[in-house]
Image (cartoon, rainbow, N blue to C red; front, side, top):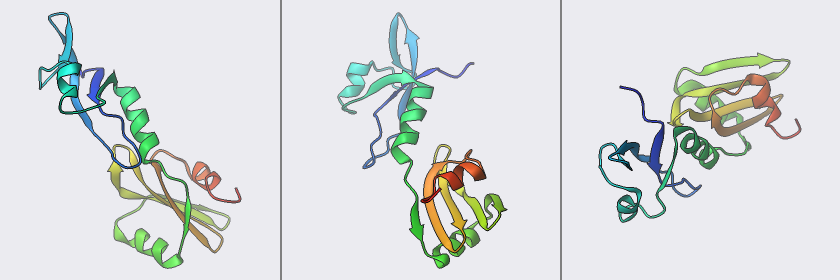
Length: 141
């Protein structure tokens, strides 16, 4: 069985992150939830603002909702994050280094930590960012 290409979801905001409510399928000429068997109007009774969109659209709005700007942290906070779990993609070059937590916030979003000289930073973004992309997100890049 192929994966559904559409989902019902409530758009995420910085205040609230929602998961997809149900996969959307076509039954008897009508788009309904794969598990709930409800239409968008029926789902809206329990989920105000529910939308029908592609899986890609849902994932893109989720990333936008949970992505954060870099903030400066202390060396101690940086080291604590480095030691809590095995880091992902721990890389360094010319006095700079970065790593990602191996525990994910949601989907492909994780906490990212970076050091530039004697300054330390963190932010949340997709785990696929390269070391160079991470360093470009820091102040003074």
